[in-house]
Length: 431
Image (cartoon, rainbow, N blue to C red):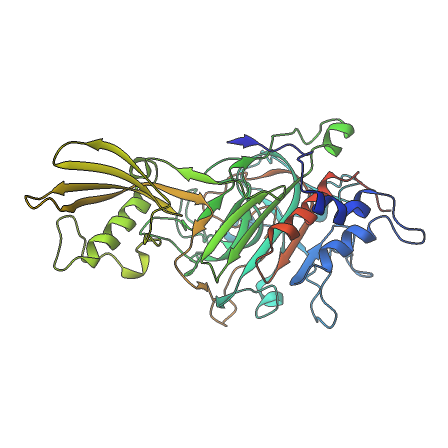
């Protein structure tokens, strides 16, 4: 685990391509324009909220930059999901999201550590206004990236995405409005590892591997520091981080990026740490063997096996060897497998046991070429910023959010380095 520094060094190419972002704006342009343009001109950008752009009339809600010809600018409503689903607490308004007055793009909103357990405010685009829109990334053959510029005060939960976790688990009391999970894609500030950049996707909107929750998630090796949201201005201005996730459907790969870096992470001893993943691997391995094997569960759903490619090991380490037995740790791109072999009388070696030892969390192998597609019946998740709807009703992420962007493709490392460089420029203020 590494704490990511806001002044992280990027390649000379990335610095050259982003020099104008941190410098003074050209004469005649607003200070935010070069930075906004760096985001919106990145191919595949379907929506970008900088918390400066608002509706010109009416409630003056925050709206997104969208491609030319788009019919929806995704204005953000304020809501308290505890009130909506449990019938408790008060309604939320824009007043519940204090403004910093500056940020990577000119403004930032605060997600506070709410002490009232019946008040969990977030900003959202209702399903009715996003269903089948470019923001509604779903189905087969689809990739997605989410980028969020933020200062993390505390927490490890959601930053932004379509990730309605459902209200059917009753962790905090039975909800009055009970719905199953409607997860599609989202970016979190950790989950497995608080402060990491965590990408999440779901093929079914609900649980994975027989677990209560969706388990397809990546966690960057680097983690963001915890910075008090009321820290002095000079501390906040130096603390912006760029969180990102990419899902590349062509590689079946989900990756978390912090400040343009996709630092790797492994979960060792997965049988003890995440037993449901270990079991999903074991069940898939046993299912491939002829007949019903000891330990095999014939009722385990075949679409929930977890067996990343293990054709050729990247490395092999012998951890125990005798004249007639050898135990190896074989490392593949996404797994480390303990392999036991016995020597036969004719001198040949035969595999007698295989077991999953470790699993790679960044990047994460995602076995489904599909993102959950809600029925066209008014259901499906909202796009939310700051929090997601979930039965635990925890406080979640707290801190400042200065920009949220969604792309309908997996961004490259070079593109993410350029977008990350924005967070290292001097914060600006837009009247």
